[in-house]
Amino acid sequence: MAKTTDVVICGSGFRGLWLASELVKIGWSVTWIQLHRTPSNKREGGFVFDDWAWQVGPAHQNSKLVKATQEFINDVIKPELQNIAVQIITPLGPFEFTGGAQKRCFKKFFKDTALELEEFLLNVDSAQKMESVKGSQLIFAYVHKVFKFPLGKRWVLEWLGSLRRPRTVGTFDWITKWGGDILNPNLGFWLLQDSLTAITERAMTWAERKGVTVMRNAKIVDVGVEGRSITGVEIQGAEGYMPCRYLILSASHQTISQKLDNFSKNIKSQLKAGDDKFVWARCGFFMKPHSKPEGLLAFSSYVIDPNMPLKEANMGLLKWRVTNDGDYLTVWVCIPNSEIMRRSYLKNLLCEIQKHLESLFPWFSKQLSAVLPFEEYFQTQDLSHDDLAVVFDESCAFAKHTTRLKNVWLGGPVYDRGLELLSRLATEMRLLTQLSEVKQKESKRDRALYAPRNGQNLDNSKQI
Image (cartoon, rainbow, N blue to C red; front, side):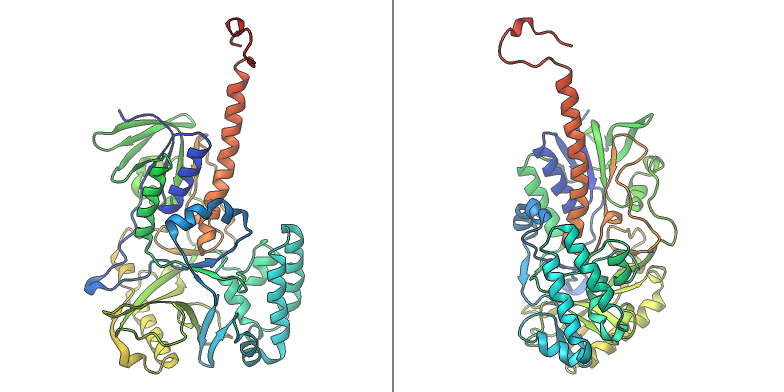
């Protein structure tokens, strides 16, 4: 039999490992088991895809979340700072929210609404530095003012909102009805250079140093259930059965169903068929060495028609990796989830994206060495929500972490509020807050079992 542990965490990569190390701090013994492995981001011919669907995040300094996760971010994720937060390539030229070109860009692209948009973004900056209620009220007021303009006069705000929300609602409804937020372009952005696999490997080593038992190659066969509680997990091979008091599933319900078929019947899926409306998918372009033009950032974006919805071929996220052997350009686009396995749709979409890149960068076709299609999406049969950045239907409420089982907690991608790094860690932070309360109640019960001791009459103290 494997050793007993207080908490077993299954998945989901680096985020589950950060949560595990925090639970060790509050006094629990924790074992982390990898439930789902991210596919390699390398393809035939050595092409290196970027495997973060949204690979930047605002470099907040005053956030409680950042303060709580700062050591983990510095030691494990190791982001670089991109001071020009947002650069969007358009048929009219590049648009930059920040830096010396900001005013010129607003005047060129928006003319009569430029001042209102600049004022809005300045107030977003001020509001996000205030305490939450006042800040939300200020943003709410300015949203009502600015969103009276047609889409073509404010499309950059939709761009900022579309990357923070995991729902199909527009930016206006996201802020006014859902209490959501938009990305603040006045802050520098973290740029994540390493792959998810590399970061997870560093997170495993980091968590082990913090006292977490990391089981790298273990496989959970089943979970023991008695009534409304779990009793432990069965590990394949020599480890055997591991009794535990709490189980945290930091992965999607889809992955849990694939890996733990029998046990998944005890957990209700938070999603219904059709809730996952859109998904971020990627294709790649292998370029000649040092093809990236001067002035183009490592992370940027393109928008073709600002009067159309920012999805499919109309808007893409660009990640450019420069090497001496050749440049790797990964393009992420938001597509209907129902199209993810349709080969003809993805082939046509790839052609459109390539045409757009050729029109935005006139030298593109001369520098292009190879095209990497959306191949993995119709070749990988067990593709799960853990691999994809899913955009859910607006009617889909945010999921609860609790289940009918008294000592099982749920985390994973369905709980994220957006696509950037801090959204993912914020999901685990909310789970940590709830589990810390459980630990405090547990400690109070333990203290109530024994009379207080002050060092006197210890022989006479009686157990209650």
